[in-house]
Image (tube, rainbow, N blue to C red):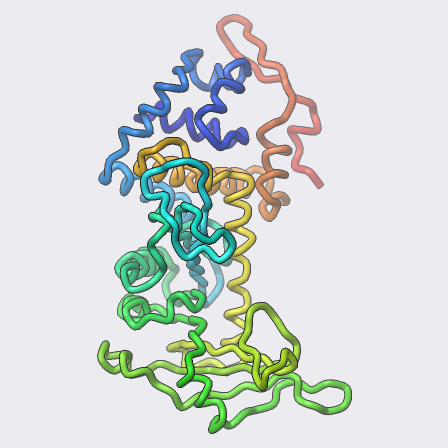
Length: 376
């Protein structure tokens, strides 16, 4: 299905989010030339997506990862960060796997609940899995997370270490063990259950920041706390770090019944780092949120293409693959644009006005001179 995949990649790169967009691009001479003048009907494209089975989906996800891991071995960082997050994709209409689930904004609305993994230093996608909407992130995903971690570790340069950052949904012994067994570090936000909060009172808090009047604004402590399930799973080395602050940042636990004292708790196996540095390192995980928003808005990962779940999964992976390809293209040809969002990359590199000229059985694409230079 090489031709069909190439056709869909070109279609997605041009800004369409559904195969139906082929009708809008059919009149574009350059798009016709890329398809050798043989554009299939929209129904044929939908049928081709429905041909993806479990093995083909694995192969397609491998292609996404292959492009996302390009250049990873050349990173100079001693520690490379793998961020994993889930998101809710609300659906309109009936779709296989579109089920109500843990949706804090649209209660009871059918949705998909995919997982996405990225390398923070390159912002490239190195893992993607479309899941039914009623599947929460937890123990059932431990095998997937462990496989993703092991896969990334194989492509690191010699001596580099991998640190996995996940939110409180990963406060699960099976996921923690999978990451630890894969030989990676982890920094996971803990669920603030009653027993965790109870350990605050016996903690030795260390002041790190003060306000102009000398009052503490940020305090850090290592909690003497263990969950029984950690012992049951052989997790004998889990470091529990708590940070309480008067400057509210994101979703935190409110202490003493007000918002002036808030706290976060982190789980990690990094014992060689300062506790406060580990907490600040977790904050950099926030970069995966804009990435998922970009995948939703610019690539339409929430746009279902039909009823069959496998077809929607295939299109989801194709969008991740095209995202990685566009990022690699920009980094190679216009390095100054490598940090731009998809909308700007399309405007500068893909949807450039031009004229396709045919002469002597040869084709030439005429574009404005400024389009040939790397923007300043």
